[in-house]
Image (cartoon, rainbow, N blue to C red; front, side, top):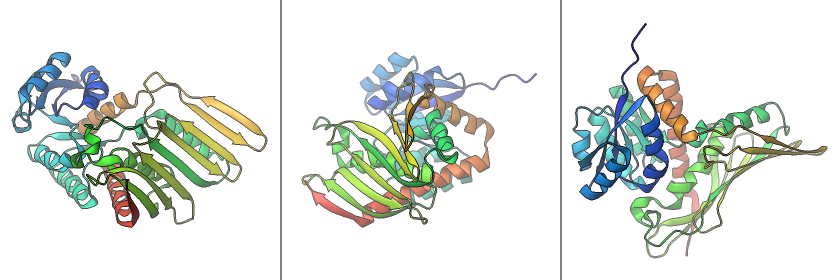
Length: 330
Protein backbone atom coordinates (compact mmCIF):
# COMPACT_ATOMS: atom_id res chain seq x y z
CA UNK A 1 0.00 0.00 0.00
CA UNK A 2 1.11 3.54 -0.72
CA UNK A 3 1.58 5.81 2.25
CA UNK A 4 -0.87 8.73 2.22
CA UNK A 5 0.54 11.94 0.84
CA UNK A 6 1.53 14.46 3.50
CA UNK A 7 -0.82 17.41 3.89
CA UNK A 8 -0.25 20.45 1.73
CA UNK A 9 1.24 23.23 3.79
CA UNK A 10 -0.90 26.30 3.19
CA UNK A 11 -0.36 29.90 4.22
CA UNK A 12 -2.91 32.71 4.28
CA UNK A 13 -2.08 36.06 2.70
CA UNK A 14 -4.20 38.57 4.57
CA UNK A 15 -6.52 38.57 7.57
CA UNK A 16 -9.94 39.36 6.13
CA UNK A 17 -12.97 38.82 8.36
CA UNK A 18 -14.53 36.52 5.73
CA UNK A 19 -11.43 34.32 5.88
CA UNK A 20 -11.68 34.08 9.66
CA UNK A 21 -15.40 33.24 9.64
CA UNK A 22 -15.77 30.99 6.61
CA UNK A 23 -12.56 29.73 5.07
CA UNK A 24 -9.96 29.26 7.79
CA UNK A 25 -12.14 26.89 9.85
CA UNK A 26 -12.60 24.54 6.87
CA UNK A 27 -8.97 24.90 5.80
CA UNK A 28 -7.84 24.01 9.32
CA UNK A 29 -10.22 21.02 9.42
CA UNK A 30 -9.33 19.53 6.03
CA UNK A 31 -7.04 16.47 6.41
CA UNK A 32 -5.37 17.26 3.10
CA UNK A 33 -4.09 20.59 4.37
CA UNK A 34 -1.98 21.89 7.21
CA UNK A 35 -2.62 25.52 8.00
CA UNK A 36 0.99 26.57 8.49
CA UNK A 37 0.96 30.36 8.71
CA UNK A 38 -1.07 33.55 8.44
CA UNK A 39 0.51 36.74 7.14
CA UNK A 40 -0.52 40.33 7.68
CA UNK A 41 1.03 43.75 7.29
CA UNK A 42 0.11 44.15 10.96
CA UNK A 43 2.08 41.99 13.39
CA UNK A 44 -0.73 42.21 15.95
CA UNK A 45 -3.40 41.09 13.49
CA UNK A 46 -1.29 38.19 12.25
CA UNK A 47 -0.73 37.12 15.86
CA UNK A 48 -4.47 37.19 16.66
CA UNK A 49 -5.32 35.03 13.63
CA UNK A 50 -2.43 32.65 14.29
CA UNK A 51 -3.45 32.20 17.94
CA UNK A 52 -7.04 31.44 16.92
CA UNK A 53 -6.02 28.73 14.43
CA UNK A 54 -2.85 27.33 15.96
CA UNK A 55 -0.38 28.34 13.25
CA UNK A 56 2.58 30.67 12.79
CA UNK A 57 2.19 34.44 12.48
CA UNK A 58 4.16 36.11 9.67
CA UNK A 59 4.74 39.84 9.37
CA UNK A 60 4.40 40.80 5.70
CA UNK A 61 3.07 38.97 2.65
CA UNK A 62 6.46 38.72 0.94
CA UNK A 63 7.91 36.91 3.93
CA UNK A 64 5.24 34.24 3.71
CA UNK A 65 5.69 33.80 -0.05
CA UNK A 66 9.44 33.38 0.44
CA UNK A 67 8.98 30.59 2.98
CA UNK A 68 10.22 27.26 1.54
CA UNK A 69 7.87 25.23 3.75
CA UNK A 70 4.70 26.69 2.19
CA UNK A 71 3.21 24.74 -0.75
CA UNK A 72 0.10 26.82 -1.39
CA UNK A 73 -1.57 30.04 -0.34
CA UNK A 74 -5.12 31.21 0.25
CA UNK A 75 -5.51 34.85 -0.69
CA UNK A 76 -8.49 36.79 0.77
CA UNK A 77 -7.23 40.31 0.00
CA UNK A 78 -9.46 43.12 -1.38
CA UNK A 79 -10.23 42.61 -5.10
CA UNK A 80 -8.00 45.37 -6.45
CA UNK A 81 -4.95 43.78 -4.74
CA UNK A 82 -5.53 40.30 -6.15
CA UNK A 83 -3.60 40.60 -9.41
CA UNK A 84 -0.35 41.74 -7.81
CA UNK A 85 -0.28 39.15 -5.03
CA UNK A 86 -1.56 36.23 -7.12
CA UNK A 87 1.28 36.88 -9.56
CA UNK A 88 3.83 37.11 -6.76
CA UNK A 89 2.57 33.86 -5.26
CA UNK A 90 2.72 32.02 -8.58
CA UNK A 91 6.22 33.31 -9.29
CA UNK A 92 7.20 32.09 -5.83
CA UNK A 93 6.07 28.61 -6.88
CA UNK A 94 2.91 28.44 -4.76
CA UNK A 95 -0.46 27.03 -5.74
CA UNK A 96 -3.13 29.68 -5.19
CA UNK A 97 -6.72 29.65 -3.95
CA UNK A 98 -7.80 33.29 -4.38
CA UNK A 99 -10.99 35.06 -3.48
CA UNK A 100 -13.20 36.20 -6.31
CA UNK A 101 -12.66 37.83 -8.67
CA UNK A 102 -9.12 36.88 -9.66
CA UNK A 103 -8.56 40.36 -11.10
CA UNK A 104 -10.57 43.42 -12.09
CA UNK A 105 -10.22 42.81 -15.83
CA UNK A 106 -10.25 39.99 -18.35
CA UNK A 107 -6.75 40.64 -19.68
CA UNK A 108 -5.27 40.37 -16.19
CA UNK A 109 -7.25 37.22 -15.46
CA UNK A 110 -6.11 35.59 -18.70
CA UNK A 111 -2.48 36.47 -18.04
CA UNK A 112 -2.53 34.95 -14.54
CA UNK A 113 -4.29 31.79 -15.67
CA UNK A 114 -1.67 31.36 -18.39
CA UNK A 115 1.14 31.98 -15.90
CA UNK A 116 -0.25 29.29 -13.59
CA UNK A 117 -0.61 26.81 -16.45
CA UNK A 118 2.92 27.52 -17.72
CA UNK A 119 4.33 26.87 -14.26
CA UNK A 120 2.24 23.76 -13.59
CA UNK A 121 0.48 25.39 -10.65
CA UNK A 122 -3.16 25.43 -9.61
CA UNK A 123 -4.87 28.83 -9.61
CA UNK A 124 -8.45 28.50 -8.42
CA UNK A 125 -10.93 31.33 -7.97
CA UNK A 126 -12.80 30.89 -4.70
CA UNK A 127 -16.31 31.37 -6.07
CA UNK A 128 -17.89 28.64 -4.01
CA UNK A 129 -21.54 28.29 -5.00
CA UNK A 130 -20.99 25.94 -8.02
CA UNK A 131 -19.53 23.48 -5.51
CA UNK A 132 -22.82 23.19 -3.58
CA UNK A 133 -24.84 20.08 -4.43
CA UNK A 134 -28.07 22.08 -4.84
CA UNK A 135 -26.90 23.42 -8.19
CA UNK A 136 -26.29 19.97 -9.62
CA UNK A 137 -29.80 19.03 -8.46
CA UNK A 138 -31.35 22.10 -10.12
CA UNK A 139 -29.49 21.38 -13.35
CA UNK A 140 -30.96 17.88 -13.33
CA UNK A 141 -34.50 19.21 -12.77
CA UNK A 142 -34.06 21.53 -15.74
CA UNK A 143 -32.49 18.86 -17.96
CA UNK A 144 -35.34 16.48 -17.11
CA UNK A 145 -37.89 19.05 -18.29
CA UNK A 146 -39.38 19.92 -14.90
CA UNK A 147 -40.52 23.31 -16.27
CA UNK A 148 -40.28 22.62 -20.00
CA UNK A 149 -37.83 24.68 -22.03
CA UNK A 150 -36.12 27.46 -20.09
CA UNK A 151 -37.10 30.91 -21.41
CA UNK A 152 -35.74 33.28 -18.76
CA UNK A 153 -33.57 33.30 -15.66
CA UNK A 154 -33.67 35.93 -12.89
CA UNK A 155 -30.83 35.96 -10.36
CA UNK A 156 -30.25 38.37 -7.47
CA UNK A 157 -27.60 38.91 -4.82
CA UNK A 158 -28.25 41.98 -2.70
CA UNK A 159 -27.34 42.98 0.84
CA UNK A 160 -28.27 45.85 3.18
CA UNK A 161 -26.01 48.92 3.40
CA UNK A 162 -22.78 48.34 5.28
CA UNK A 163 -20.98 50.64 7.75
CA UNK A 164 -19.37 53.63 6.04
CA UNK A 165 -15.85 52.31 6.66
CA UNK A 166 -16.57 48.94 5.00
CA UNK A 167 -13.93 47.97 2.43
CA UNK A 168 -16.64 47.58 -0.22
CA UNK A 169 -17.08 51.37 -0.30
CA UNK A 170 -13.43 51.96 -1.10
CA UNK A 171 -12.05 51.80 -4.66
CA UNK A 172 -9.64 48.97 -3.74
CA UNK A 173 -12.60 46.95 -2.46
CA UNK A 174 -14.04 46.70 -5.96
CA UNK A 175 -17.57 47.83 -5.14
CA UNK A 176 -20.76 45.86 -5.65
CA UNK A 177 -19.98 44.68 -9.18
CA UNK A 178 -16.83 42.81 -8.20
CA UNK A 179 -18.06 41.77 -4.77
CA UNK A 180 -21.67 40.68 -5.44
CA UNK A 181 -22.24 41.13 -9.18
CA UNK A 182 -19.92 38.29 -10.13
CA UNK A 183 -22.29 35.81 -8.48
CA UNK A 184 -25.36 36.40 -10.73
CA UNK A 185 -23.04 36.69 -13.73
CA UNK A 186 -21.41 33.35 -12.96
CA UNK A 187 -24.84 31.81 -12.29
CA UNK A 188 -25.95 32.83 -15.79
CA UNK A 189 -22.88 31.12 -17.23
CA UNK A 190 -23.36 28.10 -14.98
CA UNK A 191 -26.92 27.48 -16.11
CA UNK A 192 -27.10 28.95 -19.61
CA UNK A 193 -23.65 28.14 -20.95
CA UNK A 194 -20.55 30.04 -22.12
CA UNK A 195 -22.21 31.93 -24.98
CA UNK A 196 -24.13 34.28 -22.69
CA UNK A 197 -23.55 37.91 -23.63
CA UNK A 198 -24.50 41.24 -22.07
CA UNK A 199 -27.26 43.21 -23.80
CA UNK A 200 -27.31 46.18 -21.43
CA UNK A 201 -26.78 47.26 -17.85
CA UNK A 202 -27.32 50.01 -15.30
CA UNK A 203 -24.70 50.76 -12.63
CA UNK A 204 -25.34 53.02 -9.63
CA UNK A 205 -22.19 54.67 -8.24
CA UNK A 206 -21.35 56.88 -5.29
CA UNK A 207 -20.63 60.45 -6.35
CA UNK A 208 -17.75 60.92 -3.90
CA UNK A 209 -15.81 57.72 -4.67
CA UNK A 210 -17.09 56.39 -7.99
CA UNK A 211 -17.61 53.03 -6.31
CA UNK A 212 -20.48 50.94 -7.75
CA UNK A 213 -23.11 50.26 -5.09
CA UNK A 214 -25.74 48.48 -7.21
CA UNK A 215 -26.56 47.34 -10.70
CA UNK A 216 -28.78 45.38 -13.01
CA UNK A 217 -27.78 43.46 -16.10
CA UNK A 218 -29.74 42.05 -19.01
CA UNK A 219 -27.99 39.19 -20.79
CA UNK A 220 -29.00 36.62 -23.38
CA UNK A 221 -27.97 33.42 -25.10
CA UNK A 222 -27.77 33.13 -28.90
CA UNK A 223 -31.10 31.25 -28.75
CA UNK A 224 -32.74 34.20 -27.01
CA UNK A 225 -32.97 32.90 -23.45
CA UNK A 226 -32.70 35.99 -21.26
CA UNK A 227 -31.05 36.54 -17.89
CA UNK A 228 -32.02 39.36 -15.51
CA UNK A 229 -29.15 39.80 -13.05
CA UNK A 230 -29.46 42.12 -10.03
CA UNK A 231 -26.90 42.97 -7.37
CA UNK A 232 -26.14 45.65 -4.84
CA UNK A 233 -25.51 46.76 -1.29
CA UNK A 234 -28.37 49.20 -0.75
CA UNK A 235 -31.20 46.65 -0.54
CA UNK A 236 -32.75 44.03 1.68
CA UNK A 237 -30.84 40.74 1.79
CA UNK A 238 -31.64 38.47 -1.16
CA UNK A 239 -29.89 35.57 -2.88
CA UNK A 240 -32.36 33.97 -5.24
CA UNK A 241 -32.69 32.34 -8.61
CA UNK A 242 -35.86 31.77 -10.63
CA UNK A 243 -36.20 29.91 -13.92
CA UNK A 244 -39.24 30.56 -16.11
CA UNK A 245 -39.98 27.81 -18.58
CA UNK A 246 -42.53 26.86 -21.21
CA UNK A 247 -44.38 24.67 -18.69
CA UNK A 248 -43.68 26.19 -15.29
CA UNK A 249 -41.35 27.98 -12.89
CA UNK A 250 -38.55 26.78 -10.65
CA UNK A 251 -37.37 28.85 -7.68
CA UNK A 252 -34.36 28.45 -5.44
CA UNK A 253 -33.51 30.62 -2.44
CA UNK A 254 -30.20 30.94 -0.55
CA UNK A 255 -28.49 30.39 -3.87
CA UNK A 256 -25.05 31.71 -2.97
CA UNK A 257 -24.72 31.66 0.81
CA UNK A 258 -26.47 28.64 2.35
CA UNK A 259 -25.05 27.69 5.76
CA UNK A 260 -23.57 24.18 5.92
CA UNK A 261 -26.55 22.88 7.90
CA UNK A 262 -29.21 24.51 5.71
CA UNK A 263 -31.36 22.13 3.59
CA UNK A 264 -32.17 24.01 0.35
CA UNK A 265 -35.73 23.97 -0.97
CA UNK A 266 -36.56 23.83 -4.67
CA UNK A 267 -40.04 25.14 -5.48
CA UNK A 268 -41.59 24.04 -8.76
CA UNK A 269 -44.84 25.53 -10.01
CA UNK A 270 -46.69 24.14 -13.03
CA UNK A 271 -50.15 24.59 -14.46
CA UNK A 272 -51.34 21.47 -12.62
CA UNK A 273 -49.92 22.29 -9.20
CA UNK A 274 -46.92 23.01 -7.04
CA UNK A 275 -44.30 20.94 -5.30
CA UNK A 276 -41.43 21.55 -2.92
CA UNK A 277 -38.33 19.39 -2.90
CA UNK A 278 -36.08 19.61 0.15
CA UNK A 279 -32.47 18.91 -0.76
CA UNK A 280 -29.70 17.70 1.57
CA UNK A 281 -27.59 20.28 3.36
CA UNK A 282 -24.09 20.71 1.97
CA UNK A 283 -20.94 22.63 2.89
CA UNK A 284 -19.77 24.50 -0.19
CA UNK A 285 -16.76 25.97 1.60
CA UNK A 286 -15.43 22.57 2.64
CA UNK A 287 -16.19 21.29 -0.86
CA UNK A 288 -14.13 23.96 -2.59
CA UNK A 289 -11.20 23.38 -0.24
CA UNK A 290 -11.31 19.63 -0.97
CA UNK A 291 -11.53 20.44 -4.67
CA UNK A 292 -8.44 22.65 -4.44
CA UNK A 293 -6.44 19.95 -2.66
CA UNK A 294 -7.54 17.35 -5.23
CA UNK A 295 -6.53 19.63 -8.11
CA UNK A 296 -3.08 20.15 -6.62
CA UNK A 297 -2.63 16.44 -5.93
CA UNK A 298 -3.86 15.08 -9.26
CA UNK A 299 -3.33 17.86 -11.79
CA UNK A 300 -6.34 17.13 -14.00
CA UNK A 301 -5.69 19.25 -17.14
CA UNK A 302 -9.15 18.93 -18.73
CA UNK A 303 -10.93 20.01 -15.56
CA UNK A 304 -8.44 22.81 -14.90
CA UNK A 305 -8.88 24.06 -18.47
CA UNK A 306 -12.70 24.08 -18.16
CA UNK A 307 -12.56 25.95 -14.85
CA UNK A 308 -10.07 28.46 -16.22
CA UNK A 309 -12.32 29.10 -19.22
CA UNK A 310 -15.35 29.69 -16.95
CA UNK A 311 -13.33 32.11 -14.81
CA UNK A 312 -12.10 33.95 -17.91
CA UNK A 313 -15.55 34.14 -19.48
CA UNK A 314 -16.90 35.54 -16.21
CA UNK A 315 -14.20 38.25 -16.26
CA UNK A 316 -15.07 39.11 -19.86
CA UNK A 317 -18.76 39.46 -18.97
CA UNK A 318 -17.85 41.83 -16.12
CA UNK A 319 -15.96 43.87 -18.71
CA UNK A 320 -19.01 43.84 -20.99
CA UNK A 321 -21.14 45.14 -18.13
CA UNK A 322 -18.70 47.97 -17.46
CA UNK A 323 -18.43 48.96 -21.12
CA UNK A 324 -22.16 48.85 -21.93
CA UNK A 325 -23.67 50.16 -18.72
CA UNK A 326 -25.65 53.32 -18.27
CA UNK A 327 -24.10 54.92 -15.18
CA UNK A 328 -26.11 56.75 -12.55
CA UNK A 329 -24.48 58.72 -9.74
CA UNK A 330 -26.16 58.67 -6.34
